[in-house]
Amino acid sequence: MTTDTTSAPAPLPLLVLGQGTDLHTERGVECPGELPSPSDPDLVARARAAKAALGDKVFVLGHHYQRNEVIEFADVTGDSFKLAREAAARPDAPWIVFCGVHFMAESADILTSDEQTVILPDLAAGCSMADMAAIAQVEDCWEQLAAAGVADATVPVTYMNSSAAIKAFTGRHGGTICTSSNARTALEWAFEQVGGVGLDGTGTGKVLFLPDQHLGRNTAVRELGLSLDDCVVWDPHRRGGGLTPEQLERARIILWRGHCSVHGRFSVDAVEAARREIPGVKVIVHPECQYEVVELADEVGSTEKIIQTIAAAPAGTAWVVGTELNLVRRLAQQFPEQRIAFLEKNVCYCSTMNRIDLPHLVWALESLVDGRVVNPIRVDPTVAGEARAALDRMLALPGPTHKD
Image (cartoon, rainbow, N blue to C red):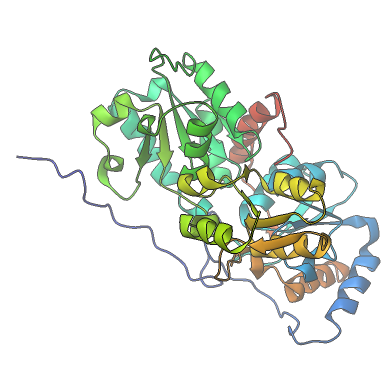
């Protein structure tokens, strides 16, 4: 009799964006209330009036991937953890309107005071990557790692792009959170907890990296010197993750089978086409891209690093950029003296990030003016405490911890 290691457990139900209710995941939820019409010519004036009426009581955060119509009203722009830190640094603002996605608003709620309320203009603004690691799946994975005898030698490292529940899991098991800027530092710290990286073959400790396999692989191989053979991928939809006990024993980094639906689209063919078509072009991509794409790029870095690199480049420089299209277009507008193009031929917006539009922002702001708080994001106190423990470990790491 043989044991089937490939059959998949029953898949988790998926909710259509904007339909159904599941506030504990990044999946689609209902957004109650009467929204202004997108064709309303007074939307900009209404947003300005509502924001002016609220004054210092409201603090609007805008992620780099937001539309320009929303970024116009942001008090601060940035990446996810930078924005959460900015919210925590404004304790006098009782309302934080987070123009981003669900996991970002959760992080802001964890880091801000109990007197502050974080508001997400559209509850259906989630993250497909974060949803690729449900807490039940991750806890099942850990149980199977324990059964295989490797859990005690494994430290979880979780990317910021994850739900509060996954961050709490990481906190409970002695792990840390990382951003795309400090993933190397976080992995080095994690390996130190279990004997070091050990490139000479002496290392036996492991890291479970959640939920983006590409950031984990790129960091482990390109920055820590591990090999591709040191990496295995845990597939939550296959029994035992699709791995044998021997594979788990040999592995140094166990990558969760997750990815960014935007950055995962960039291809080797697109990089090669850009080099053929644009003389002297430089390719810069986000580390959430596939390993083969990152290997061909001239520069690799977080969203903030992409912005800083292009801002510092000489006039006349030609770039193709592998990240979300809203940001690439904004960079092209901000730096017209450079030639800036999008790496992919097809449109590549973050569809869930784009659910935060001007009608939703106006609705959230006008509701506050009327004394109604809509779409508050509140993380369970126990979950928040455990997640905060993992975030605090990250804050204690050296280097660019909060420059995501």
